[in-house]
Image (cartoon, rainbow, N blue to C red; front, side):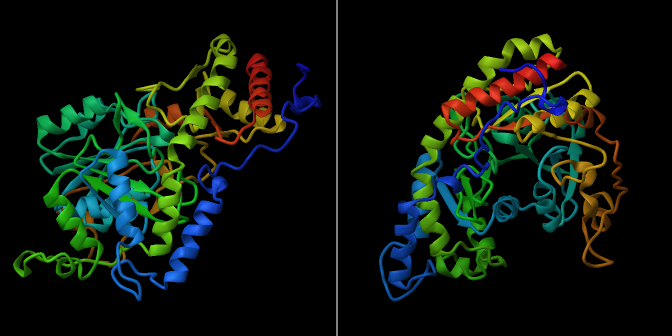
Length: 420
């Protein structure tokens, strides 16, 4: 391997294009094709009725997903955002309430709270790039109703500490597991630590049905309320007494989505095993260079439970991180810095324009007016998070990397780290 960087005219370390980072999407095959054909041939595209009787694909997917994750109940919905909203509605979160969310998460985590009329309160992240339990505790007020633990980039939050904080203050704990399906913390699947877990099946996620989501819970009362919220006639369909029925909106999953999701669920453990293998192989090869460059891997709260889908390094400065990204891209690695002041990214709180500006659909509506107290957001309100993210260099770890590509990616990282 030539030590001259490609950015300086040297030979690229990565010889062939790396696979796109759509883990489940890239493994769509005959199983998904047959599942979709079976649904089409049955002419039953809606879970509750059609010309064919028997168990629907959505029912079957819910049963198998709940069993796979170790939860009592699963509810298939139209998106990960819908799953979060169903969790919050199931907990009775609404106007005047506060929901603590991390500074680093897709905007949907916060917008789900806004949609229910609640105020998102933004907490710092720590070196794991997940929500900091100490800052969560500092942000709790008499209005706090829930904490949302987001397992970013496939890595578990400190669920033991967050569970303890939630119990001591009597608030709910929701897990946003959109990016970490199948991952775990201390041997227990993510999504089962809190009162509810919300998963996404959008195309970028570990397993996918293109769009879709799942709510899991062990709380029957929460599950029953979520059923009613996700379907305008959910109460009647499930024989809930009329005096208990609440209004809902349609977040139902179709039979086609469920058929694909069910086939993908069968591939989950293989995807996790391959990502973890590739992640460990690359990390082992470059560990000495990471230390020698004054950098560090992001902290993993449970290395064995991590999904392995991303290798993230924390560099000494934001300037070095940006240079490393450009150098790695020249080598053929699709690296990115997790925060750049000039690049809008809805994963970082300061770019959540509708929330930062407290915009709502109605001039008289919205949680910031209903709260009847001053609620303010500023771009620099979470300085530690912005510092950590600006120094973070992210590398996708596809489950479909060949052994030679693992070696090439490792060589690219070695070259750039040595140059640092």
